[in-house]
Length: 289
Ligand SMILES: Nc1ncnc2c1ncn2[C@@H]1O[C@H](COP(=O)(O)OP(=O)(O)OP(=O)(O)O)[C@@H](O)[C@H]1O
Ligand SMILES: [Mg+2]
Image (cartoon, rainbow, N blue to C red; front, side, top):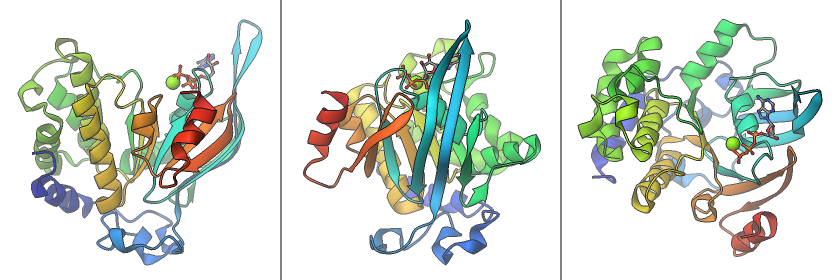
């Protein structure tokens, strides 16, 4: 079921409905289509545009007269078509980073580019459109709307984008892959934590986003469902040209990614590619597991 060609066909078909990124003309041709047929044939030497580029990113919170430096001058680029895991201790700024990259909150300083487009000085409407058309977000707390059914929650971003009709088919495929077909008419409170998480994932994927930002997407899932979600990300990255930025505390989940970056006190303090023999050692060194 999970590895069905049906899903691949569905994702590819829906991917064709994506608009060309506004500044994609600056990039090589493969950056312009979401579903790149040659994705598997890319060589490491081939230049790839950045799906996400953050520079000098700082975010400080004022809390009871105290300043919390959630992010301090963070630098991060994520090439298009990369599966990136973000690790770091609790409070190191992972969710803050994802919220900023997801254009859900503004930084105190620094810049963010999405698919080559600067987000600086964009109006609220332009930010909303960019978020809606390019980004899929899985929040740490799921953030499902309580008085809507699972189906309505999942379809909401598509309806807001005027793509409700096309999305019905994608919904059916995602529901099958995520094993929530029998729960689509339930409200969030009538779902288990893992089911809510899968609904949140389906909602993030419904518009076939270019960049998926996921905060602990496997945190509430049993091992098998967690692996399915990680496989879904891997296959989307490999076959559909997705870029995934996934926060996780779980080294096993992080090893599904292509690359892992480590945050501490609002800064990147290290990174590793997972293909190398030293990846596990690097995880141990930075997160002490
Ligand atoms: N709205 C806020 N107001 C004040 N402080 C905040 C706010 N949001 C986050 N913080 C603080 O910023 C720091 C980074 O928080 P963040 O949520 O990004 O951490 P995290 O790495 O995601 O942690 P966790 O692994 O526990 O989810 C923490 O010290 C947190 O207390
Ligand atoms: Mg967090």
